[in-house]
Image (cartoon, rainbow, N blue to C red; front, side):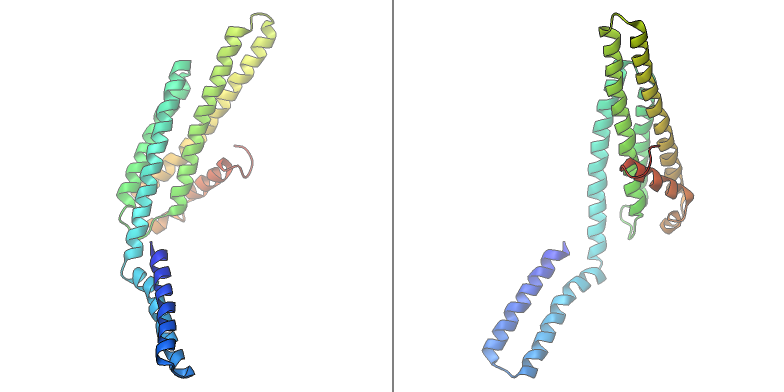
Length: 228
């Protein structure tokens, strides 16, 4: 929000400097003094914006908008993937989807109660937690894809039982791997959510071991590092 106001102040200062020099035709020192005053006036805009607390209000509004938008998107994705898992009869996947829905709800409540309206927020934690949540949902979506593949194998391969069994077992192992990966993600999400909810000071959280674990998982989820 401050950038357009700073730009406007700078443009006005340049216009006024030009008019001043043209109108008064003063000497070099006289003009230099006016230029210095105009520069200070332009620079005072972002400084006053921060000193008067407007930057804090804008940051809080940005956090609220981002959190509410991400929350709505995650819940919509979870509803869709839960229905798909139920249709395929993947009970463990459905259980994880419902557990993750509860986690996302709890996380949203913690963010609103602990960080909305505060002067500082652990954005590192917030971004990492969202990354891990998105990865967990993606794993559930991958289970849906694998589940469709397993259903296709069952329905379409009539001959070659060994071939069918090997491919079916391979897909079953893939689902088990996704379930195990989500368990690790869930442990990290649960641990950090509990710590944040019970923390006396926001700054304390930056020194916790669980944050380091969450950040490591977020890095892996982003595609850097080795597979879980």
